[in-house]
Image 1 (tube, rainbow, N blue to C red):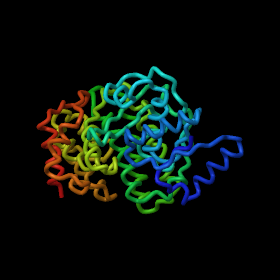
Image 2 (cartoon, helix red, strand yellow; image 1 turned 180 degrees about the vertical axis):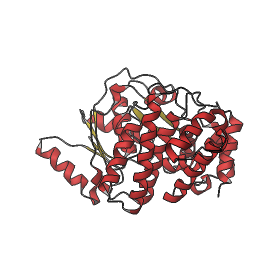
Image 3 (cartoon, one colour; image 1 turned 90 degrees about the vertical axis):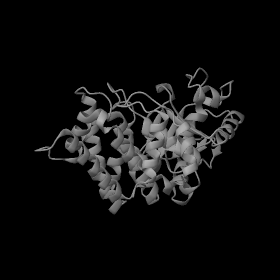
Image 4 (cartoon, rainbow, N blue to C red; image 1 turned 30 degrees about the horizontal axis):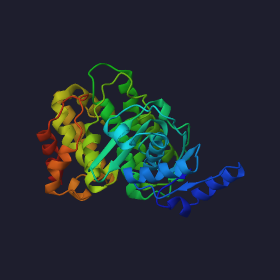
Length: 357
């Protein structure tokens, strides 16, 4: 079953390349196109029916993270005897039925979905967008990463991918207080991402920059960086709830709330924020307090975000005042970062984003 999105792969020639290879190898190809940027539970039902009716034995996702997430969702849901949405996303149960293997050909980078067990599905009726990170039995069996396949990606989507990568790294980095090798790995990934993103914004067909970004995205969320870390996924939880109400581009939901969130929790994890400022943003600590160093690091991060053109205000994503409370209600509260938020704190962070310049 060939899974793809809105049809851009037919315009840029990637579809023809993939289909030619499949047909040369005698494959019977069933298509499931039209996967939306935030794949829905209704679309999942459609995909499961196609897969079951055609006795599909491999799902090949050609596209970005949404296509890959969707393919994994179909792979675990097709042979599920219960309601997959209830079982796997609402109740977060492990997979106990047959799984259809998944392969991936990436055309957009950011999610790292090509090398992890994550699958995010949106239920519009319930106004919920939920990500379930399954075990390695759900990982794609292979992934083709060709940086040239990302060249035709619209600029907005490219930039959103940049911040999705950064958020994945930061949400693992800002947890724990020990001297962890994983932090050194993440600091290197962040420096490479910042450097390469600046090049890619000016020259989208710079192969070295795009290949580095593609590789960083994979390593950011393939479980390596999470080793020994508690991990803090609250930016994703709030961002996904925003997405459930607006269908906004995922990476931009993260960028719009990250600065208010990190400025709020900075005081609870000050040593790590000060370290981040020095190792990633080259802040000179001489004559400065830990708080001053940490604050300067976040200021430099914000400057970079504005420089490359990220969304900084949730109003720009379609969020209105009357959505604030329900978005906060729909944000799953996790405990792994430096501060476990409550409902009112999430409301405050959302309001701070709305007041950002």
